[in-house]
Image 1 (cartoon, rainbow, N blue to C red):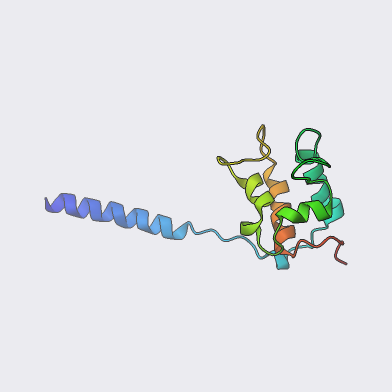
Image 2: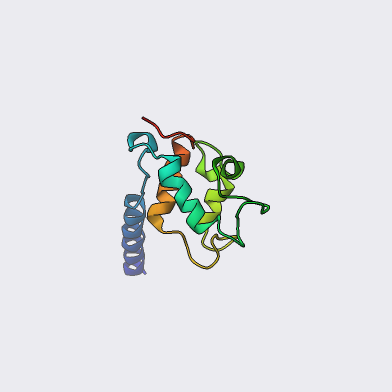
Length: 123
């Protein structure tokens, strides 16, 4: 009984250390190079979302221009941006439904939102 207690204590301690040491934090978006909506973000939305039959101009959720995209983006807050939440979702309402947007493109969108989701390119 004592050996089992020691064994399980060591195992629990080991996994506790591993879980504590595996905390990841995302880099601060303001410390990164500014993301430009026109050249960096818009092409991602247009190629993956704003295509005919999906979220193109005239659809219920148009993702083809800055004003229409901003209807589903909360500046500085990716967690409260429905469009961003849909593109990072793996199960519920995942968009696009046929294939995920590449991770680097999702990261560009996240950084753009965290930097304020501005329309004009920063200097």
